[in-house]
Length: 207
Image 1 (cartoon, helix red, strand yellow):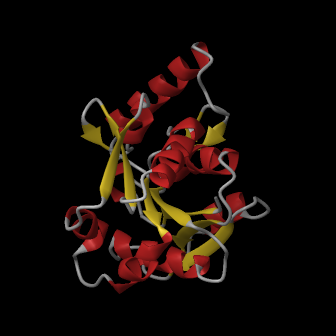
Image 2 (cartoon, one colour):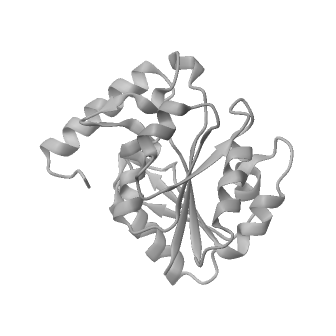
Image 3 (cartoon, rainbow, N blue to C red):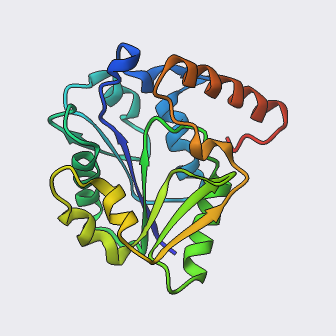
């Protein structure tokens, strides 16, 4: 199954004083950790949406096997970046596509493959969402048939409204705390550093 991915990395990270996605996590930056499992799961294309003025992010990603899309207004809603990224998928041949925030860096490729497998075997579902200990997380996997509905969302509705308005959503329990660990504060960052260390200690890191 051909799988596309949109990773949103255009936020300004104001609560953490700047571009949090360029903070180190192990021997790589957060955004590199975020992208890695999608590469391992052979997603193609992987579209990373960045702020049009974010030259450090552009420099880091240039030469990597991803497509870079620009959001000219990083202060806009996340949905705007998602739609910018989705438009880059349009000319590609894919059956399902992920949407994932750039500040959730420790999802494993095993989880991505689990979501793909679950959605492909449940013909009545069009969206798959991972859960960890009952909490819903990211990324969200959409069937190709939802490409136009995602592009058609307007205003402050966001993806959440689309997901919660449907009865064809599959929740997939995963043994992966990374699906619910988003980095919105320095405390979150410390938790991510700790989880990364634990994953390496246990030999569970995917990359």
